[in-house]
Image 1: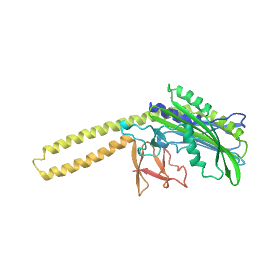
Image 2: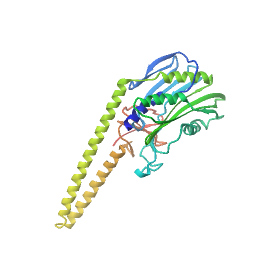
Image 3: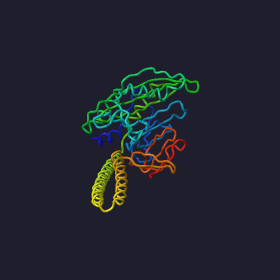
Image 4: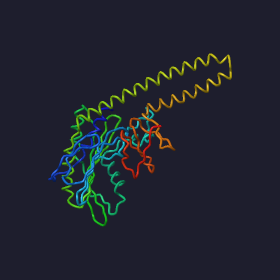
Amino acid sequence: MFHQICLILAVSFLLVACGSGGAPRLTKVEEPREQAFSVKMPAGWSHQLAIVRPGDQARGLGFAKSPDGASFLFFGDAKLPVYYLPAPQMGMPAGMNMGSPSLQVKAFVPAEAYFAEYARREFGQLPGFQVLSTRPCPFMEERMRNEASKYGLQPEITTTSIAFQFEEEGQLVQAQLNGISWRLDQVWLVDVNGFITSESPEDMAATLEQVVVSIETNKEWQARENERHQQRMAAMQEQTRQIQAQTRASFQAHQQRMADMQRSFDAHNQAWANQQAAQDRSHERFIDAIREEETVTNGTQQMKVEAGADHYYVNPQTGEYIGSRYEENPDVSVYELWKKK
């Protein structure tokens, strides 16, 4: 089930736009790093597309800016976590530390409340910030239900579209955030897109919708993602088998040492100390396997992160990290590279 959720998450960035009306001429471009998806962007606009993997969940991001700088649109946000519902019976209370900012335990929050806070957090400090309207976004819900139905899933879905304004260099600009919050079993996720413009917000809403509707996931990339997930699951199963074998061997060694206790009290004490150390290491590996974690370092410090990536980038100011299979720093002015220990 969680694998199906991951697959939907990998394409859920296709589902977040609301608007109506006309749209400018679009030109098809492809995400350059993994060729994960293509999208039609406004012709002549500068743009950037990327796949990022917070918590090992693939998310598509897109940004575009008009030539005169009057309008900006985006879809996706790599900072948005994957949430687990609190499950006290399983030792998962709300606010539990999952060892990664990309994985959090939190009660489900509908889209309207979630993205009202998101808008205040991201834009509320700007001069003249004012929410103009809030409404559901049926387009987003319809798109998500269609995607979920491909996997035979029926998630709980809430959507919102928040229009607001603020001042930028003394000029009043219009903006809109479209958000979705959806839940399936013990997991819930959110995604977002939006625009900022000093021109017509209606035209920008229509443009954003046209952009998002045009996104197409590369089937070959999706097949590689499926294979990658299966390999990761197989590796975890093998790691669990090895840990279990090590635990059995450790227990047998302990039994032998206990049999030798009568011959030498000092030897027994030393053997016991060795056994405790071995159990501690085995326990740490076992916990890391359960949490899917590994230790990374920047040369002077160490930290625990979610396993599954080749390289990790850490924001030293916030502690946030992003895992990646590539060594390119996503933002050299903020993030620093941490490597596996």
